[in-house]
Length: 360
Ligand code: SAM
Ligand code: SF4
Ligand code: SF4
Image (cartoon, rainbow, N blue to C red; front, top):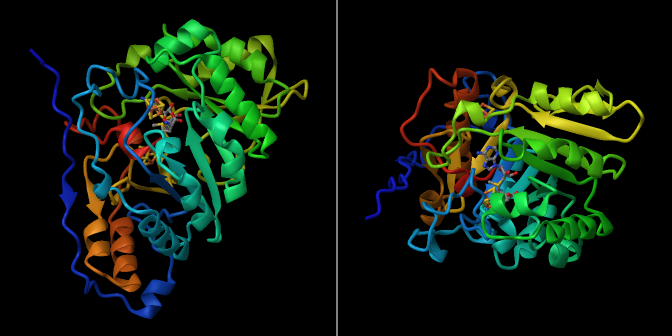
């Protein structure tokens, strides 16, 4: 008997009528949300599929062979994605991150990158690194600027256990090296820390990446989605991560590169580079959150913890013109009042979007 909870189907807010009132004057102004935040970053999830089954993201017993992933025709085409991205650039977006699922599983992703790179934005990508060694060069040639690679352990046994598909760590390390060779640096290396699972890897990872030019970042295990068995005891607060590294390699705090940067930055006092922490649980950063997320099937999510998306695909496929789409985008952004991490605990939600669907 299979007692697993069903994957929720996310309610979609009805499309706004295409006649949402927007004058040219209105469109010229930057839209701000209910908390005064403007949109600067767009994260585009290009697939809900993945070749890993990280226990904190796509636990195998839920994302098993019976799991219904999105059918191909539900996915936005590259042309549809680029069109939406271009409209977001018109609204102030300056950074686009391609994510997933595992984005390198999407066929001919380089074609999308080529199209996005023609917009006036920085295009980056987050990957588990499994296919990076073979794809780094073509991604860079297509116009990708930087990559972020997820890597939760250097120890092969721990890494294989966490990805839960027995994938060897050396192939991800080879991917990181290939990305550096292809000019996709400085590479960010993201490690999700689970207390009792891989917190013993913090120092080995720090030792390994010090002096490499890559920026290692430790992420607090988050209560995203509804299936990753999250509990507060498994969260190692970033303050403790910093203390552990500082005890071996003295650190000093660096200023943020820009408002809204999610990582707190630290530098090794001996000049061996930078390390960061992302404290979404212990130190929420919602007030500077300027990110909109586009799902593989064309829904906008205003927060990683949203329980509903706002559909754009129907409007797009019904032949809406750019001003109608822009009006819808602005309407969604203007209605945004999300600050889940700041309210965590008060704001318990029955169903939240899965990380593997919307991307980190
Ligand atoms: N598959 C790609 C990868 O793993 O890099 C991109 C998508 S993945 C959902 C994006 C990021 O989300 C990864 O760095 C991953 O470690 C992080 N992530 C997934 N589940 C998480 C969780 N429960 N808490 C914190 N970070 C999480
Ligand atoms: Fe896949 Fe990334 Fe989720 Fe791991 S974190 S299961 S690699 S989508
Ligand atoms: Fe942004 Fe939502 Fe995360 Fe807060 S909880 S930082 S609003 S994505």
